[in-house]
Length: 189
Ligand SMILES: [Zn+2]
Image (cartoon, rainbow, N blue to C red; front, side, top):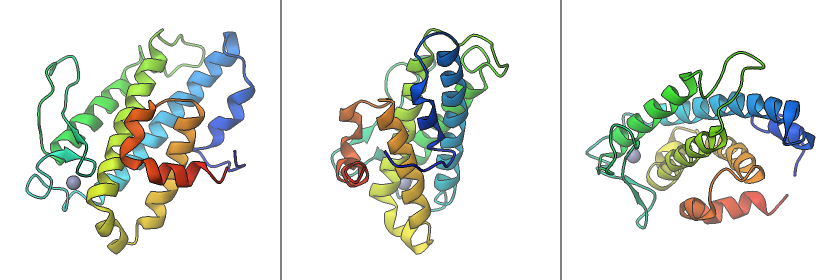
């Protein structure tokens, strides 16, 4: 792994911590902080595309011709529904925000206990954030280039993917829509 110490990569520093007791507690605090950072990055990146990612241009949430996502949160919407990409991203970001704001999942106070399903929630957050990247790369990359956001997008995605791979936060099959790009990021390390 590289020695980048940006916000997105600082999590690597915690690799040495044990997975039990205080170390695990600290690790979770770092994960929680980074989840917020990664969420904000995706929010800002997608925010530059809102006038282009419309229900007319993107009637379904896709990541290239082979992958289509349907929305379900498992609570209010149990059966996956087909919605436009902007609606999907809206549902997705609202869902993540509600998780991050939920003190029983992401306690704000240092030392407060994390729930037993904490890792599962974090994994779902990262899986869903990945889908926004996959949609941006497949459907809006030319627009990103014309907005001169390309380098920024690539940097954000690189940090995101190094972090998720390091801590095995996303299943391999979920990463398939951006497989080649991911291999070009992972191989040099
Ligand atoms: Zn779109």
